[in-house]
Length: 264
Length: 99
Image (cartoon, rainbow over the protein chains, first blue to last red):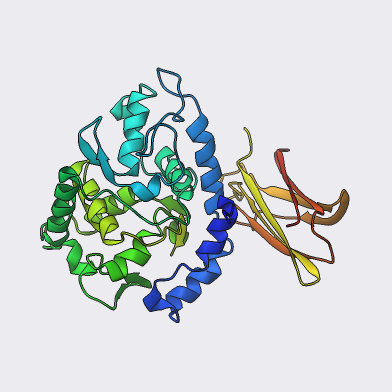
């Protein structure tokens, strides 16, 4: 039985914690937080924005092709990132949304990316749109593209980047996400190169983040990780964050998507 | 300025109706807003048209309030309506049938 998205988000949010943390304080916290999660509000705002006419072309995003055909939202997020022939590159959700803002709505890249990451008071367009689109894949298995040569190349680049040490602290993603059983403050650090941990984790993004009262996305997470590693900020929707997102999502392949979810 | 989305879930449980309402509202205190407070002052709950809850709320409640409560008795199909009024006169409401 297909449960309405709003209820599915609530139902699935109770099964949030990774298998390894069923009895852990992380799982308890997530169970308590899930009940009052405002995720549905972001999804509703995203639905409105999806239909809103904007830009020089005064068009909505309703004809945006997220990989399943123009305007098809069901299962679209579960199929990302993937190769798009019309741009001859691999794109994740936010990169593709930007593409649609520029092509369908006629907006400039500069204008559309002016404020990609929001805050507690005002979420960004990308955040509410991501919430809405992702909610339409709730309950479906993650099937990112991995057969096309460019999808394979993106995965390989992501893998290399995951282990690449750089910056003033000589950090790589693996510096924090490379060892099992580690945590940062009170958040688990999943070893994202392993399907065992990537699976439960990648199926929770995008998510509402309690500590900042804001809704966060994967492009934001890549950006913030690089900031935390004291490395230059990656360009939104560029090859680097897309490759990393591809690497981690392919590692989570087949696991049921249960987001958008809630985080500490 | 139009109020943000409001979502409600009302489910029948053993002898009571479990209700959860998500409200979009900045809920700004006097201090946060530097003298321009903006918060929900009244929350009203109606069951099949009859008022059952009349709440007076203050600036002590945070952004995007979640109101979770139980109503004794009730049956599937009962109409629950939750509405709010803020200190600027803005209102919003949502209705749902008990599932």
